[in-house]
Length: 116
Length: 113
Image (cartoon, rainbow over all chains, first blue to last red; front, side, top):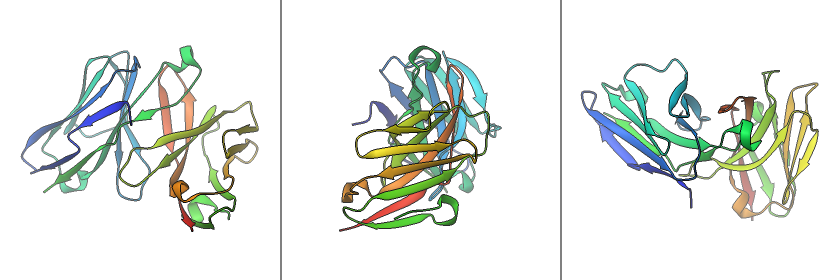
């Protein structure tokens, strides 16, 4: 079983809705990530938080708004999305590689988003 | 069986045979490489990694080979089993406190019983 928990597993929303995806880990990891994955494509990096601070924003549209309330939680707030934003949204976490020497990302099962 | 990654996204192998999945990476600054396995409906799962100062690393039934000269990575799976059926992604990583991990295109491995 994955140690990264994502909710909800499935979400259907209209283009005018506001919703949030949630991610939680209790492995003591200090880096957390959002990836977007379209069908039959590799995961694409969206955001990286390191020690609760936004470290990377891969030119993601502002209709996606990340939030890291504490070291265990990561949210992705969604507003005014487009149908092409429908995808699997994956959350991941990792140890500080400079401390641990390992680069493994631990992924959740994902939240499958459908925008109507 | 052997794939060439971008040009052959699906690899079919007989159960018990060895599988070779290939990947080309692009960033010379990448110093760490990882193979992930993604089963249908699940998130990617770590298989094995290799640092750029190594040429080969072995795990349980898996071996990763790195050729920095031609920026090529391969994953060898020995005695392929039905449970190995999945999509395999290579990923390259630039060394920071966090990881900036960029995934390759992926290869679907189908194991024929």
